[in-house]
Image 1 (spheres, rainbow, N blue to C red):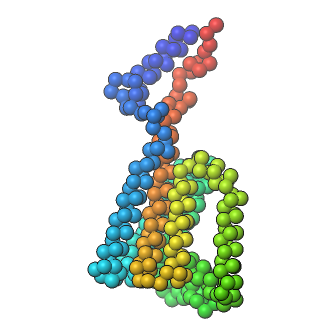
Image 2 (image 1 turned 90 degrees about the vertical axis):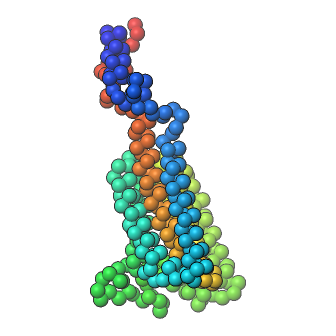
Length: 273
């Protein structure tokens, strides 16, 4: 009975075209190439896109005085909006195919962040919805998520000044870092389950730099052009993160082939007397 089961098992391997040991079969070096390593080409594409974007901003600044970059609802903002929308769609696909738990949570976070970025770039529909008027808070029209940070900063500047203002800002930064430290175990656990969390963290970092510039901490013209570029970089990073999760999922499924359900019956339960 053991020999018959073993024979059926060898036959199943020989006739299946996906078996790397079959002549002409597909080679899947799962032992030497992990599923996470297969996402590196996504990182290379992302790096190339960021470099091209930076060169575009520099040339636009030198040749056209940032006419293409800083224009409201211009080329850069339009590309950013479309890229955020693409990131949201890819993240939805990643969330749909992801296993329950960490991968699905991270994909949902990427999708929600990308959707918020898309709405921010189109000013929450101000230029698309007829008769829409943005709300005004603390004397400032709110046409994007970043405006809430501007309102908060203006309130701090009004209430505090000098050393006290910097002390409050330092306390807020310290509180944020403390929250990250308290969540380190959760983030470590999520990172062990999917590569998308790293892209999400990088996206948060780039949009934070854009918000800092928008608050007026950098006042030279090139910095405002870089703000638009950083927003586009955030969209690119989120798109890459969602795509990396899809690649990671597919590579993991390929590395674990064949599943236990495809093994011939009895091959795992047979024992030598």
